[in-house]
Length: 289
Image 1 (spheres, rainbow, N blue to C red):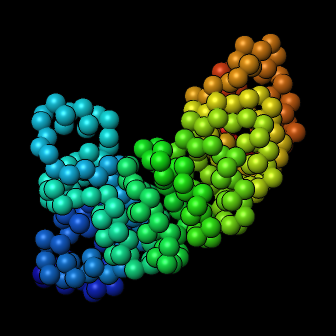
Image 2 (cartoon, rainbow, N blue to C red; image 1 turned 90 degrees about the vertical axis):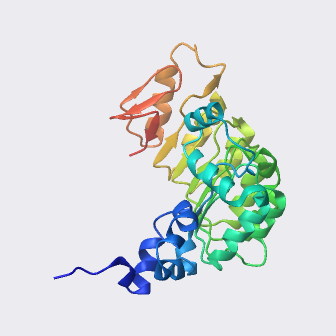
């Protein structure tokens, strides 16, 4: 008995499957399989998770050494190269972001922006209710300019539950996040300075956070204490590879921090003097229980 063919699947099932394959396959593989797949991948439901490549760059030829270096540094370099070779010199960040967002027809729930994203592209995502269902937004580490202006747009994403920023001055944006994003439970802002002002802003505006990623940050001792005491809903705090201001070699630092942790009902397996926390096999991530 001959089995069913993929191209014979109902459109609803195809859309469900194709919505999980990712942007690279939707753009560069699926359209060339058969007519039914080409038709199905145009459905907005296939474009709910918009994970853009790390970079978008026009094709200018790739030599073997460039390939080797980028493949080591950028996990999705293959996608970036295929995209550039397909669209040649017509590829631009702004046009590509607009094109993909239009495909979603307002259904996008997750967006990870590409490096070098422009203000025009970000505004396009934010305005005119183009992404009213957006729950997760990642700006990325390669968008320092966008990080500086995102505060202008944060009020447009009232359903956000997860937000990932690059290096950012948190005290400028946290009050706006707290004012407009009442559902936010996960915030990531690595390699950021965390002083008492930033910590105070976190505690007063986002005290209901459950997941906080501040790895690689530059901490003041009092700032960490304020966060731990004020954000009582935290279940995970990532403080890997931090710079500890004035406390790295402080005598009794371990005992001091353990006393703070007890104050927020925290169980901690190990803690060392450079701010690296280890719980079971999950190194560098602090879990609160």
